[in-house]
Image 1 (tube, helix red, strand yellow):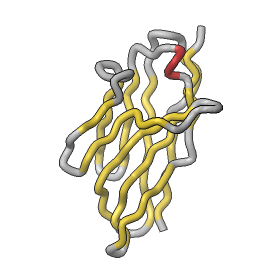
Image 2: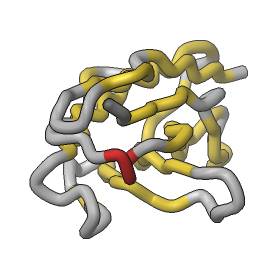
Image 3: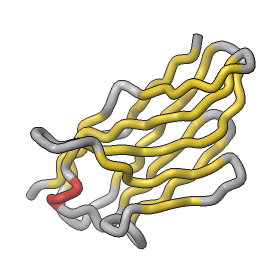
Length: 117
């Protein structure tokens, strides 16, 4: 069993910064990929950024130059700078894991990010 725990969301003014974290724990596993998604009411969940096990990153155009994904062991971070009101959403981490030889996808519980003055 694997658990993902997200933290770091909150309310920030436009132009401010937040750092989200997502820690994976539990059964022995290896990580194939780590992603951050976000979702606003009435819209589909969208990919913000992903990072492969080899360190290759893929950012949505809307966040390039402002957001940075990083990983330390089994924790993935999303550093968000120069935040805009349109970045307001629930952010979810998503991990592609190999557990007991099986590939599975795991989601965090989501954390609210609100950018407002």
